[in-house]
Image (cartoon, rainbow, N blue to C red; front, side):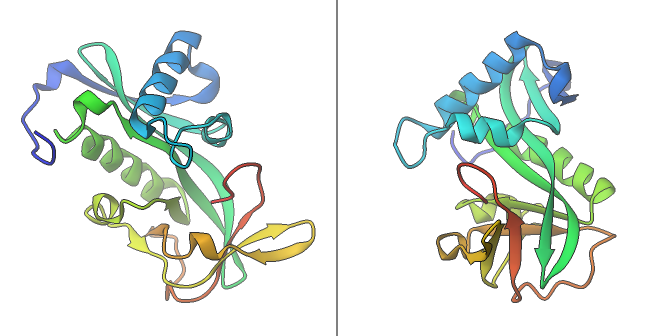
Length: 192
């Protein structure tokens, strides 16, 4: 059934926006279970504690199906610089749908709400991914220019992230050429 959306009765689906402090321990455990299962056990792809730390402190988008958490995304505020200009950015983290529930439109439903929230709230949206097509359908654009991280030692290139960063223009975005430089603040784990 992968890649084929099916109609799911609305009364079976609940999409919630929850601030990190308002998540219960049981909800956090259920969300993390979905993330770990969806990312898989591979050393390069697995969902880590750093990945979870990147997802806290903002707003969590939690999709329940029949009372069970089956999809999640988080939006945290970060300051990205585009050609040196700081922009208040809604950065998307920890996006996943439970493996047994993928390909039926739940992730699209979740990300449509995330995308709307970012457009209403931030100067820019951004995320790092290798699954461009999934996000491009919702208006996300691949950043074509070089990427950098701002550290205590200055701005450092992150060429391993070039081509993996997507941005979402909002009504408050400046004109974006997408070929200039983009930089993020340093953080432990993956900086992007």
